[in-house]
Amino acid sequence: MKKGTQDPPSYKTLIIGHCKEGTFEAGYKLLHFMLRRDYVPDFETYVLLINGFLQKGEPILAYRTLERMLKSSYLPKTSVFHSVLSELLKNDFASESASLVVLMIDRKIRQDINLSTHTVRLLFGSELRIKAFQIVELLYDNGYVVDMEELIGFICQNGKLLDAQKMLSFCLEKGHNVDINVCNVVIEALCKMKRPLEAFGLYYKLVEKGNHQQLSCLEGLRTALEAGGRSEEAKFVSKRMPNERQLTDL
Image 1 (cartoon, rainbow, N blue to C red):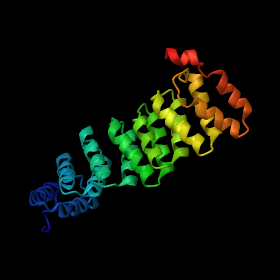
Image 2 (cartoon, rainbow, N blue to C red; image 1 turned 135 degrees about the vertical axis):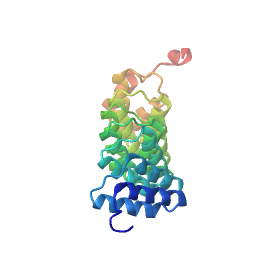
Image 3 (cartoon, rainbow, N blue to C red; image 1 turned 120 degrees about the vertical axis):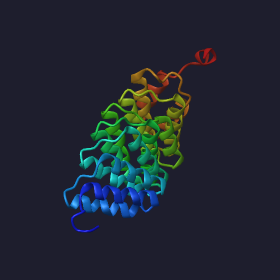
Image 4 (tube, rainbow, N blue to C red; image 1 turned 90 degrees about the vertical axis):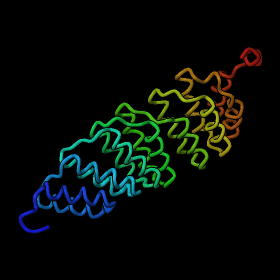
């Protein structure tokens, strides 16, 4: 670009040209040049680059462009955020996906439950459990939820039973109803790994919510508590176990 033509419209023309040719990285470099010269790219320029990077399979560059767009005081449609997050997840970018979820919450952008759940799953699968719990808490604190049945099932399948116990406990404390079969699976698994107190803690929370009547794991829980020398807890379970007549009526 010749001296004297370094103005925003000229930059935009060149960036659009690069986008049409599919050379989005070159367009991104020009975006950098504009920002260094305190020129603010317009809304269309940002969206063109974001969409181009997504089409080319470069979600990290799409995410970075989105960040720069927000710093330039532009707010794209919710669908743009969701598209970038979806591509980050498809490419297993766990940390960046989590960062984008946080950014969306900060900007009051509506969350998508499937994308949020996928983000937390990816964090657990990437051994980023602390970050996973932080994201779940942040979502719930801001009025959003994740698919707890799917998430807890995924955690159990990966053998992270104490994480599943913690997630289920958090869920119950937040007043979120969880499928009783998921509760059975977690409690039974904890008993098998000789963690009856953790299993009893979940059971007690279910009793408090009045959602314990349909549990099928109580015999195993009582046995595990007795084997672990927890007689008082075992008696608590026994008193609330349905008798044979009640079981026949269910």
